Figure (cartoon, rainbow, N blue to C red):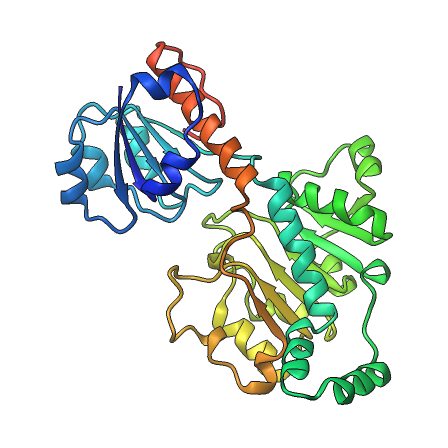
Length: 328
């Protein structure tokens, strides 16, 4: 079994699980950004491609690899893989759904708190000798406690539900919107209530995005979406940058039509310096918090993800048809 990895060789080798398949398989590691021609030169007869979540696996590469049987995303996202090209050749595509739910949920809660408490503004004030001045102003202006907020989840899969489990002890009221509502028992367990998207946006202090990138969700957070949010609303995105119309969000922050945004992901990645959200006016820039798409990259997540990947490769090597987290 010949396995080609596209991403970080150091990460691949660090998290390689101690399984018979990892000792038996031939492993060829390449870095993110390597051209298709170089990938084909490195492992033209690969049976498996394991690609990090933002490395493209396109039709040309898929069609040029005669032995390819499985393409496995190292993460949850698989929108960089040409699913139709894989399906046309009968190649399985799998992801690591669920392995990062807890760690991304932690990131979402962190961004909520940073936005509510104006953490970056406070950090700058202390460093610049303005600590007391800002403290006095914040005591007059006030800020919301997380437990007093109504939090709305747009999309409510494993990560959204993990976030709700973290938030429930805070006492937050929580609404969610997804295509198919949960059963009443699970709603009660999580402390959530289904709402239409319009009602959720109009009601919630915090709107947290947890949808995958599809034709339906790409750019869904547009001018109309943002206009339906409260003027003191906070937008949190730990999903994918493609979900947000970045020009529209930049305009909303400049105009003050929403209060703040906490973003773990932008588009494209790597983030370019001409991105409208990194070129805001000083006042608007003070209302946005970035993290470098690290919500799901805790060590525990990678150990779980790489075990999932290699267990699927072992199933493939054994001739089993049923793979975990198969998306096509």
